[in-house]
Each structure stands twice: as structure tokens, then as C-alpha cells.
Image (cartoon, rainbow over all chains, first blue to last red):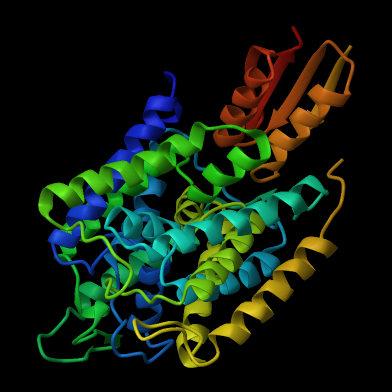
Length: 362
Length: 72
């Protein structure tokens, strides 16, 4: 097997550029504004599609997410990198996933969407990205002081298949119960009739794009949290190249297709409460750093057999359900009724985890 | 003598942190790092080179790899 081109500097930049262009184009095909791809929002929509929450405007089984996991699985098998593993503090990863989602939904987006919002001219994204960076910085302080969730164990290949199979099951459900125009429910699945959940590219396009990105991202180890973490912790710019490429190419694509609208007020699926845009992403960034990956990266790791990342993903989906059931999530009108309390509790939980889970790995 | 860093089963960024720690604080001319994923193999190699070390050899080892790093 030759050298992995995707893991080179140009490889990671190429993958970032690819995601940036594709994400901006997905909006053209029907995905919501500055939300060509948003791992947090799309997992939240999946939580809504299966009825874990009943926020009627954000319910859709997003095929991009399914594609991410299955594309990564395909790449991992093709290049003999499928490594079934599990057992590094799964309950901690679940809780981190829950609060990562709660924080992301106070801002209204994962790091990918924060970058896409910036590339679309949404100034509020600056606050979100600043918060994300600060949260990751807090995470690096814990890493420097011995924070460590312990080793994984090698497990059965079938254990590594469980999240990919779950995603496959979701896809099958979507085919059995396709969206019916004018109906909020088809069989067991919920489908938004209005709002962001009603805005989506055709299933086939979303799925193919998801598979392609899942494949490329698995090969390149693309990770937005890792980009910031490695920069802060090691002064290493490798992953950061992909991060910058995503913003630059999404920005260029937005300019070309006429999607660039600079400003703060009236941005799509965004609010202007600066403090909470910052604080929400600070919580998410800290949770990502403590869990070792941004939401996208966790999906790709789950695809290559990492059961702990799979648990983080499930935590995010459950966190989305809590976010909407408990009015923690923001909306274009502003933060949710209990959004502030959720950020405070989430920070307390993450600090508790960071301070108490330190050991030497030897 | 070669120092050994066993980073198998540890997720990002632990393998890199442990390798850098050994490079900075250890004194052995060679360091062997055990990892179990391709991501860790790439990250550890990249980090070692950024410290001016040489990655002499990468051998498959069980489910993972054994990376031989030399100080220069």
C-alpha cells in the first residue's frame, strides 16, 4: 500500500476545500442557509425524525450523516484501517456528547457550520468561533495536566459495525417511509413541513455527498477541533490547513453562486446574542476537546470501528432531544428559555470531568 | 538503549503528547513508539519530525505499528 496522499498537507487542504465547495453547493440543492452541512444540526434533525423531540421544524432523517459513517466505513475497509475498539470511558464520552450538542445548539451549529456561517457572511459566527477556540484552549490545559480517558480494548468487528448498521437501519426506514408532501409524519418517521427541517437536498444527492465526504475525511483525519487543538498545544498547522481551506473555498463558492450576505442581523438560522454565541461554542469546544474530536470526526471514527466515538454520537443525538424538550436550544429569536442554565451546568460538568479524570497512562 | 512509549489504545492527542514528552525529557538516543491506529502512526511520525527527530522505520506490530524514532 502506497503513502496515504490524503494525510499529506495538500491532502488535508484538498479535503477541506472539497467540503467547503460541496457544503455551499448543498444549499443550492435545498439545504438550509449557511447549513449545507452541520453535523450538530443534522444529528438534531435525526433525533427529531425518530421522535426523540417534537420540535416540528427540525425533523428530518439527514442522509449526509448516514453517508459520513458509511463512507468512512468503506474507506476504512478498503485501506485495511477498520479497527474495532471500545472501552475508553464510554459513559464519559456519552455525557460529553450530550453537552457538546447542548452547547452547539445554543450557538446554532457545529464547528463546520460555524465556518460555513462565516463563509456566508454571518458575523455572529466570529463569536462562535472565538468561543470554540477558547473552549478548545481550556481543553488543552486539561490535556497538559494529565487528563486522559484511558485505553480502548480491541473488540469484535461486529461491535464496530453497530453504529454503521444503525445508520443503515435509518436509511432503510427512510426508504420504507419516504416523505409524503403535506404530511408531518410518514410511518414511524417525522418530517418537518416548514422550517430548516423541511429544507433539504434530494435524498440521493445528500447520500452520495455524505459518502464522498465520509470517505475523504476518514483518509485525511479531517478534524476541526483537532485543527485548533494541535495549533494551540503543539503549534502544529497540519489539520489547520484543512480548516482554513474549508472557509476559503466555501466563501469563494458562496460569492460565485450569490450566497454571500455579510451582516449580523437576519442571518439564516442564527441569533445575535453575542455572549451566548460565544458561551455555547465554548462549552461545545471544551466537550469536543475532552472527547478528542469534533462531531464530524466522531462520525468518521465510528465508521472505522471506534465504539467510543459511536457512544459520543449517540450522546449528541440524545443531547439534541434534551435541548429541544427542555427549551435549551436557541432559535432565530434568541436563546432558549433555559439555554443559559444549560451552558452553566454543562461547563460545570465538563470541568468536573476535566479535573477529576487525570492519570498517567503508563 | 531505546526508550519505549506504549500508546496503544489511546486516542488523540495522547500518543503525540507521550512521544513529545519522551523526546523532551528522555535521554535515550532512540525511541520506540507503539500505536494501534494509522492516524496515531501518522500523527506521531509528524510530531517527531517537527521536533527535528528522524523516523527511521515503521514496522507492523500485531494490530498496530512500532515506530522507531532517532534523535538527531
